[in-house]
Length: 204
Image (cartoon, rainbow, N blue to C red; front, side, top):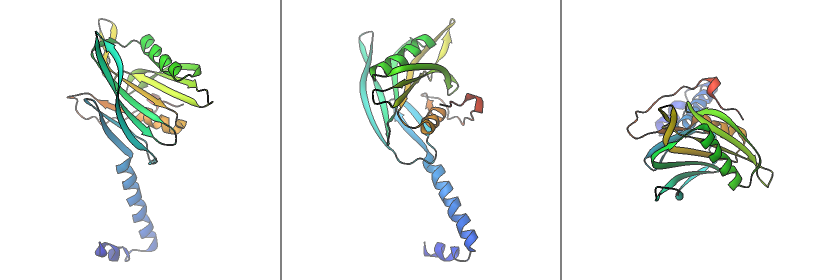
């Protein structure tokens, strides 16, 4: 370590600033992407340079299908304002039409006592999603988006087994980063380096 500092002294002051800046950029880049496991699924997201958060995990009862309870695996992104990612694997194929997904988004926002609810069709990970916005009793806004990472068509109807719910009270810029960077990798799926076009990005 001492040799490193001695070596740095040989640089000009400008060179030292450049080296320091590069170290900070590399550190930020390495720390930016988070990868977590929710149930059997690997989930990654990137909040850029924002580091003022902690991750907490829990499993909560969510839905009963054919008499069997299916839990949601939840990642809470605890910061000044809450963000959340929840995955629910129903074990069987469920209809994943936009109307049913919209109903689930509206139900989530209603349960949070939101009013003035608006919904929009968007793409998350290149998959159809419903994004909802509602005003809480406190006057703050809550975002909820739901999509099906494994969505596919069967005889003209869309189905999925796993749904992903994203909720956020955070500022628009931070919520946008979460929505635009989230990636759910299904079991057996190869890692994918995904470049999303500007037209696919969600802007709040």
